[in-house]
Length: 99
Image 1 (cartoon, rainbow, N blue to C red):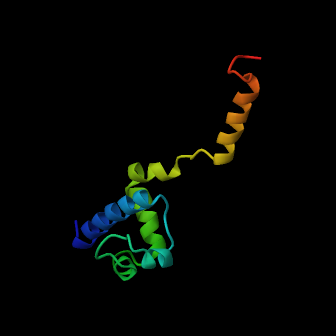
Image 2: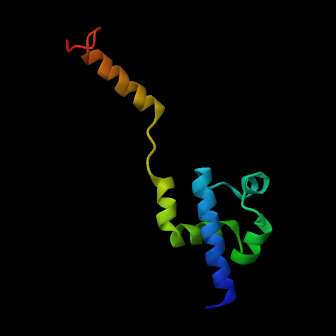
Image 3: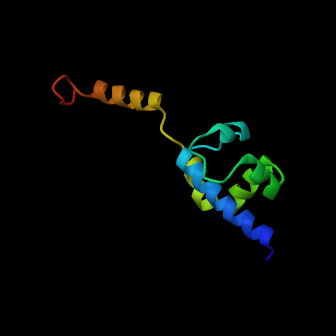
């Protein structure tokens, strides 16, 4: 195993942790200005190791599938929650008993 592949894996794990903490995968520009990005990791470092931002995204998505599974889970929409709440209120009376 070469040193570059070890660096790729280590950086992919760090980036996956960052993506999970952030809740999404940012663009390169958003990453550059984010004050909460991992220390000592700049977009130039990613370009030097991976070649481009998109190849880093692809490598991280394939190498750290288990960590990034959290990002792909469907989050409940606020509108759906409200609809469910009103539907429940329609089936109950004013004092909480069934109609």
